[in-house]
Amino acid sequence: MEVTEVADGIWFARTEYVNWIVLVEGDRAALVDCGYPGQAGLLEESVRRAGVTMEQVEALVVTHNHVDHTGSMPALSARGVRVLAGADEMPMLRGERVESATTTDVLLRAWRPRVLRWALGIARLGASGHPHVDTVEAVVPGQPLDLPCSPVPVSLPGHTSGHIALHFPAQRAVATGDALVTGHSLSPVEGPQAIDAFFHHDTSRLRATLPDLALLDADLVLPGHGPAAHVPIARAVGEALSV
Image (cartoon, rainbow, N blue to C red):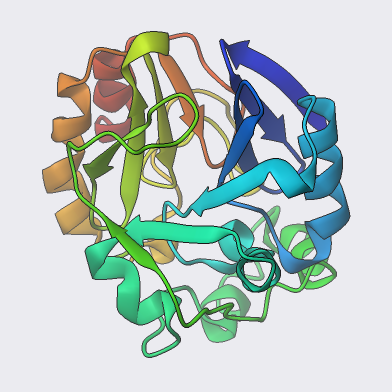
């Protein structure tokens, strides 16, 4: 795992299979996503590397409810950590509906290079689960959150119905979740790109809303998969849509 302060107060944790973010401001801390269930130890280590403790983590902002982004969510919620997400993500977060690739989706593609190794790797991390919680706070797009680094939610549906990105105006950064990535275990290349289409709930909706991301003032892309990228977000969106 690599944990790097990529901008003031924003610590980017990158692992082999997925990323998350630790936000720190004074004695306050928050998380953006939280990895697979089997990465709880790495999550805690990333918080320590950011110079804070788990006791200082006051909130978890979820870009979307896929197991690789919400693995520690139930445990965090049980400890009193607030869980925040897009309003349209609530049914998935409460366990009422699932919008994610299935085991069958993966098996149908097991013949492809990279798929089998990736599938076996994430299986060891608890990839078959669908974490959910009872209490979630809905964020309002465009309204800054009272959290470290003041992230501003951006509605970005398509990967899931309630997927959001988070804009950090002061740092000119944007956490893109899985709407736009810079790499993935199934991809042979790095750079701004769309994640494999079978992961999306509604690919056409994502492609229709992704240009909204290009309107942000940001030149640091913090994706759910792949390395952080110092690139104008408008250019990153253009490259992702060109494929």
